[in-house]
Length: 146
Length: 146
Image 1 (tube, chains in turn cyan, brown):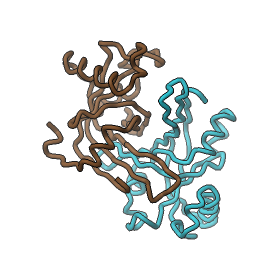
Image 2: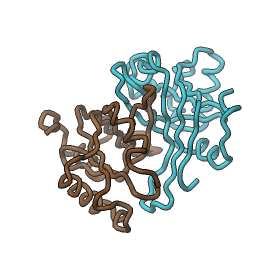
Image 3: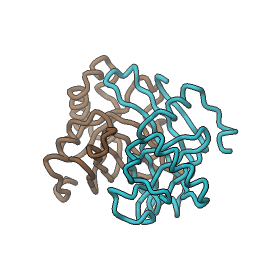
Image 4: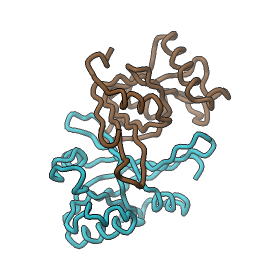
């Protein structure tokens, strides 16, 4: 839905679909920013990220990114790639809202997409019933060599 | 100064000194997070990042990261490296405050350190009088294979 009003080029879309890692910023209860690297999939409309069962041995709602978004849903997601040749630098900045996926069928679909993109998940790191964070973009901006 | 009370291992210090890129999160005037990739130096105590003259053709105080920290100094800086071998993943999360360097001699020292680390700056992308953001850590946490 969100992307009906957000136009992105085919090149930006390709970056979002193929990038292996993104950095997710949330805002904590004191209003301070927090960042973690995340694996994710982009389905053309929204982003999904799994709350891994391992190696983080804590319940999903204890993880900072989940606690933060439950209070302050606004998130920023950065997809970029560093290169010492600075003429090749680029980034895509996604700003929007993060929320745990409540619907079981949407959650299972996200788990399947994440497993398809990351064979690493096949070793049991992402349960069928894993908690999934959905990031719905409100703004997507890009910069540089895309 | 800040690091007198923050102990980091030699391994974490080495990562902070050698990493070529970090991702900087700030919080905008609406309380929403924002992220950009930055080049930086770590002098063992604080982080410095240059506000490049090019290719961003705007005055330094117009840049989002600078505007945000002038109102909300809290920042988060993530240093990490993605690898498809997830047993090798690591990150260092620095949380602290960001501020433009006011003292000319501190600014010149930071410019020299940045040019020494990044030969790319030698081509005129970082003026002698470039604006420099200082990030003073209040908390440094690390995770994974460091």
